[in-house]
Image (tube, rainbow, N blue to C red; front, side, top):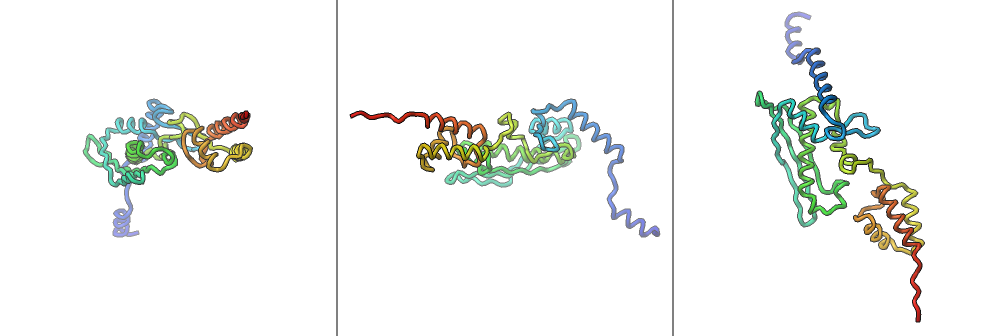
Length: 237
């Protein structure tokens, strides 16, 4: 390779900004900070079967502080249909280095009231919740990018809703539970509408049987069983 070819190649191929030693040192410091200053269940969470822990909002805020980032939040798109009860928000979070005033990273996030965990709730009480979730998703996305920590954390199960909000792993009802519920309902000569209203009354919300949790299905079975044991009232003439 002559000088001209070597010169051209050097200007085409990007060069490392940091040495390998500096990269390793930065990663070691980050991992040490996570180990010594971040709390499992508060700053990040783990679920069996998921290879990487999930970064929670509290942990993202700690990383944002230690790296010296200031955040700017923008709602870039919104849909607020008050007639149909549908709400959708898209947020963008920009992280600025407080020392240099340079943009470090941008993150995007979206949330809407038809997501599974919101779908069967009163949408008009969830407007602020959905908006905040969109902001939070964008914030965590930005922090993962700015701190280069996506190799350590994931956002796929952001905020560990099933762990942090319910403090337990939510398991869906089994086929056996649902079949038994339908068997009991037939014994009581319930129509589909009767069963639907009965289940809604027992678990406090209206949702398809496939979305019942094991706990909810157990409550329905117990309620049906007790109801089926009631003796019909005898009328006297």
